[in-house]
Image (cartoon, one colour):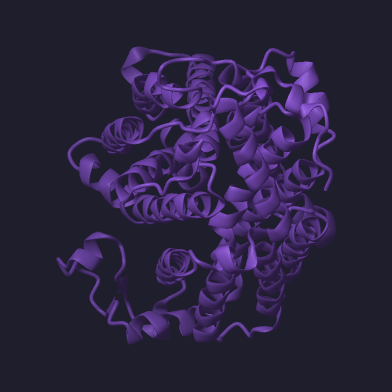
Length: 518
């Protein structure tokens, strides 16, 4: 069908990207703040809070394949995947507010009731996340069959993702503090997350009303989920991408915690103070300056001689993160044409190979080389960013590969199993950092600046992260979906769909008796 290869409009690509911007208002809030929300606002112990974070995520990982089966078997006038974005939008917004509403002490709830409330609302939120984001991700594989358009679509998507992450990281805590004035932190969190929830609802509706599903399978799915999974196990590219995703998101979770400790316990505080002073973000006065930067917490009060308890590390770390997000956005936009020229697999191999080197280089920086830390972080963002959009496009290629080989398309199952790998990677990455620090460096949470712990932060931030990047590179090296194969696959599938739409005998599925071999 010719329409499956038509260029997507700017409105449709931008509208599609809004869905993942909404998802990241939740996702990044979980990554950055949820643990402290449960300990500081709910008043839960660290172990209890960790369990509430862990088990819903594991449940979510196992629910993703179930959601993939449901999505693949959904048939509406809006398509298979797009309606789920609409159906989950209102429940998502409601549960998001409930999950960040702390029970008031006046309610007289016992500790057990508070724990149950936190666990139930977080589990509901993670379930709705799967019900929305798994079909949303699969939509990129059915909005267009054009390989380059898919890459452009995912480039728009991840520009929006980084913009949402920038907003969550930069504005959540200031808004919490603002709404807490005259109330308490619990009220601040509830009001702030209400704003994010309303934004999610609006963004999901924009995605639903601006997008269309165009790619239809030649044969509708009438097989069992067991058969779908059995066919997936014959899909070599899918297997390598599942492993890649496990390593990739394990790396992201591990790197987040490792870098926080690297900048707070290894980097020299005096050097960081000089860094922020050079940017005009310090004042010797203890009183508030009334500036916007001070309102947002970006002013370091005091002098170089009394910085032990200052927020110099927080400000420096925040600037590092913002520089990385901004660089990633710019590079994603600038690198949209690279995959058309070199192929997605080649871009991924080059990106992760270079990221391995930049990650390992962090170990060799002295603690006072803060400008080099910034430069290395920006360089790392430059070499990593081109992979962001192309890798998500490769997931759609894996769905194409199944259709090419078997004559049946189960996009939802492909993306659901990728989602399972993603969430298991996130769970193992965070836990893995603690296992490494405790098992090899004698890490004691009461002594975070102990020399042995600092050694652990340095090695985890550099060589362990680099090793995971190298594992991602290896997965792509054995993946056979290079540029030539994906182009051949796309052309042959387009010919099959054209014949099917013309009412040829291929509609019966007989054309699929001889699968492609590659």
